[in-house]
Length: 292
Image 1 (spheres, rainbow, N blue to C red):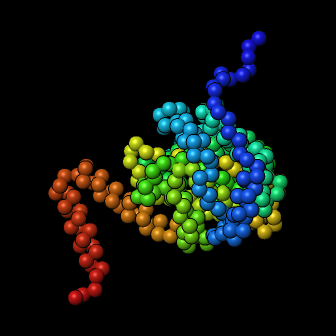
Image 2 (image 1 turned 45 degrees about the horizontal axis):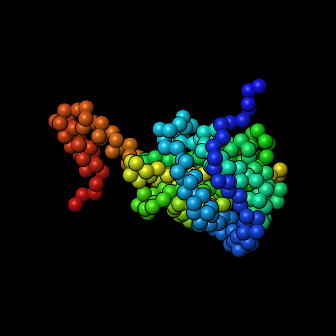
């Protein structure tokens, strides 16, 4: 009879300690619930150092597997949600993050009771962003279409050693009116970020990564749900991801399009034609200026 078991790989098992997590939740619960612009917490050294390193060692490069690719004006990233694409320890850690010990920790931390993990890892799992990639500011989809549950929490675990400030990739948390970024969180190694998700919990990293070509921004992402949510959080009917433009983004986009058009013109047109266009443009601008 053919075995249904996957090939076995010997790994040292890892399990969260219930007492340690409950103490951590109690320590951060007050700050979580009063955080601005919406409830969140940043916890460094979330996994034991050696476990986090082994998960990083297992993390596939962009060429190692057939990633699901987002490549549009709103997001440019790679995602792998199916557990068979992951290393053995990564699979175990994700299983632990969806198990009762961590669920209890999250409920005490956030005050959200009846949390349900997502075994399908819809939209979650392993995320990877290459140089030039980004994720525009957004609020997440608010219902799991398969489980028919309300999305309540995000948990992000970053796996980026020696991440320099100038590389970018900071997680930005924006105010509900989309007037300003309130928090910028660097995606450094073994940093865990938990935050509440509503139709106005706007977040993302809208600026393209500037890390070296051989570096990527790596993370694990898990989402948690409940059957219903408080009336105060019901602002919109079921929706997919709600992307938002940050202040000045339209102007920035116009400048980028203008510069691209000029570059193409220089490549395709003779130098005299390019010079003529520049003179004509300056003449038009000059007619709109007040007399000296």
